[in-house]
Image (tube, rainbow, N blue to C red; front, side, top):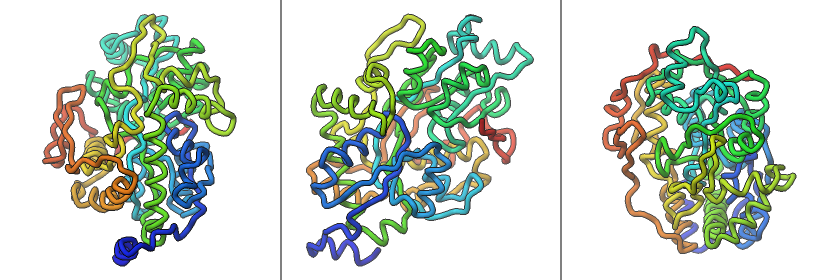
Length: 400
């Protein structure tokens, strides 16, 4: 990797590998990857992106780690779990090339709970603590963003996500079917699946992930570090193509509309346009009669602010792994983030396509429980919560 930047500076910037295998899951936040691959942005940077839809995050993880996929639309926490060797797979050096989006995941509850009047966080907490039967909540991957938003949200309302309820793993597209069949009582998932469940009368949205953390990090463009080391120009070109696509999508409402139409097709989400489009625009209705335009909608670019791989974003996921016992010991938070987040490569790509690049690699946020996160003291932050895992073994994760 030491000679690659020099080669690039000297003008040898043609992609070493011009045809790339790119994984994605059928979620609205794969939008910039799909647009880059299909609307000419990849070709402008000397690439052909062969999109490979995956059926589960576990499958995507295995193919990414093995090199069967060159890069992928990926859960933030998944990249770090593989890098740290969490979740039953050997540790492998991984990389975050860029952020793909912020916001736009949701926590939904079942029609049965709605009929029982469990339509607020307080009512849910009373139901959990006063009933002998434990509710079952689904998320999409044990170390993924949906697990972390669900755990954080439940804990902020006094519900221990590992001991007061059952936690199970369900692929995104199967969430509503499991909810309707009564196998689960609620879930956290990305769009369009939460909005689709509401439109079909399969429960309601109780919270959005942006209500947990406004403008939170979500999906990333992830890869094995070996890909960068072997093909640094291809990695840089890939970032440039997806950055350009992200910027295009957010330039006009019409571009968002055409993106929704593209995503709704059989090859991507395979969903009706009127199910995909509203929440892609930030227009919500929760199934309880409430409608709003969210102040923190799906952000795919936001003038580059949604794309910079902030060190503090990667560090936050590790603090939550430690909080819930997925990590038995504290890692060197900053050092690990520095290994995974490809800031230099991202800055080079952003500069080449005239995307503004914040100078700071840390950002400051306040979450739903009032906690302040800025990456300055991750060790203390991981220990600052009232609710923690009761042991270092973590939760038993069940796949349905």
